[in-house]
Image (cartoon, rainbow, N blue to C red):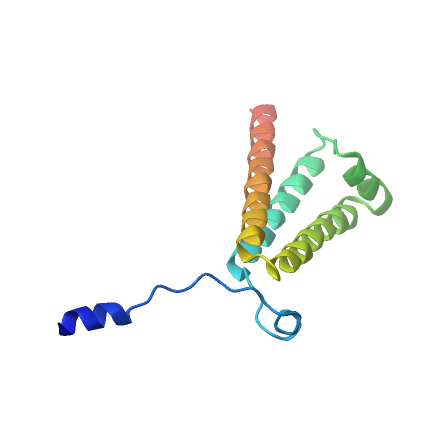
Length: 131
């Protein structure tokens, strides 16, 4: 009987609840791990893109990214472009998390997987053209 009471006392950690705007501004943000992973993968993408462009064998095929690259150079231009995208996605997902944390988590995880695919494609391009 005592064992049953101890088992009942163990609760699973609940799914993160919706946040208030006050908690959003002044408190801990939801989805910190997912956001960190998204930012990390995008940093790898930035370095991979810079590496490909610096090799001289590749050019930027995205016209919007190319605009930034042509106007501000390979470091600042790509950094502005990629950082802008990361900030936009992170802000949007935090706003979504105010209403639906599960949906915001899905968006961030999807974005992370998409960027990982881009990084792997970039790596494949580089390896195919260098040997």
